[in-house]
Image (tube, rainbow, N blue to C red; front, side):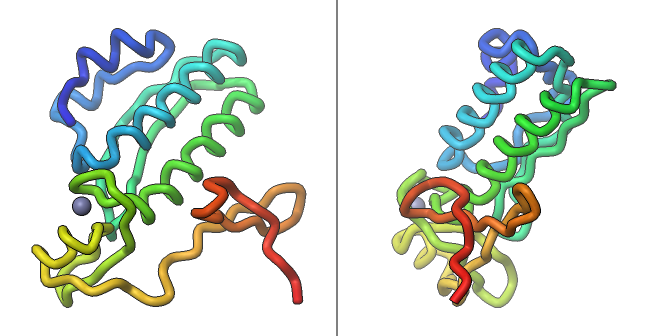
Length: 157
Ligand SMILES: [Zn+2]
């Protein structure tokens, strides 16, 4: 994923200056990154402020996107943070290598989100239970549901 110039053309409200050394994650997450950038572009265009992308990388098996905005309206911030949490949560269910459905795996040395085939290449086993990505919305804890592909209220039994 190092087509920075192409991305910059597609998302004029975002700046990619600090990403000139490339995006440090696998192509399998291209759609997840693209969805985040598309939402960030839309929210920035509507709410004002310019998003500066600092780094897009894999860390501990998940997608991390570092960014900052200079004095943006709060609504812009929230919209972009929300898109980011969704991107991070999604990354734990998509093989970073090929984009097929995946799980967080560990091989004693490193964490990686992989499909069965690419986990085998790393001699890596699924981590159980997988990571639970939660956010707070209106004072309630909501967790990412991979089946629904969105954050949903955690059931209280
Ligand atoms: Zn794979």
